[in-house]
Length: 343
Image 1 (tube, rainbow, N blue to C red):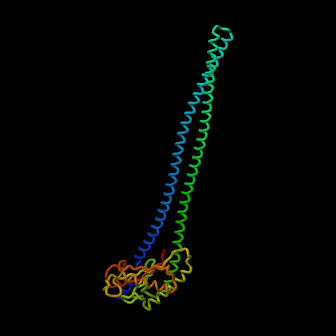
Image 2 (cartoon, helix red, strand yellow):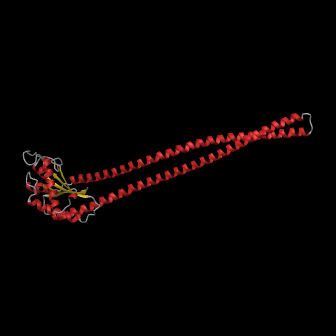
Image 3 (cartoon, helix red, strand yellow):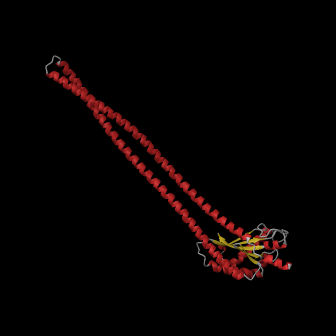
């Protein structure tokens, strides 16, 4: 009876590690997407920062030209006032000249005085006319300068508007790029998940007759006793036979996976928590777990699986499946795990 209960415990599928692995994969995918988003935001902020500097320079130039335009308008108004005053003085001088000319023609005794006064007024009138002409020339020059300033301001405003338009287009393109990248990543993850499911389905069919080979989450778990003798990293005959089945299934599914999907088969070696003596071939459990994972990888390479699609990792005793120091727990923790994942 006790033996039957023990067998039921051994055959019971432990779903908790698989659940933890699924959450870990989801967390890694989320972290990767967040990293892409942060990178896109960083590139966007860099581009926007550069455009802000250009916009600030353009705004500064527009402000300077606006101040200069206001100053030129003030000078123009002063000259216009001067021209108006000169025109009024010229009109008064003309009136005075006419009055004196009338006195001269009427034969008044003050003819000589009037003639002298007329000459002075004529000279003053010529001077005022010259001043008026110079003022008009200055007003015309100011009008030209104001027109040039207005054209410069219009050109700067057009450049500013074009820069803002390019900035909006750039932001739209970056946002669209981020969306497309997220969609592409999601599609690649979905495709790899589909091929992973196919690979696992075929392995289930091939290895269904072995109770010492388990599925834990998204990994196939081989007990070390199936593949290696105690303390050794060389595949035994049974291990070679089982790994041949895995290699054939992987070669079949690999031919169906598109080349643009970056996938690898990760081979993880694990040991129990019993320390090695340190006097043998391997000094500690780290070296033993790495050597066993590497032995499996090299065998897969000999069967035609590209080395670029394989990863070997050793975890020693530090990633146990079963807590505790019982013989049963330690037997489950001595294992090789296979996982089809992203590179």
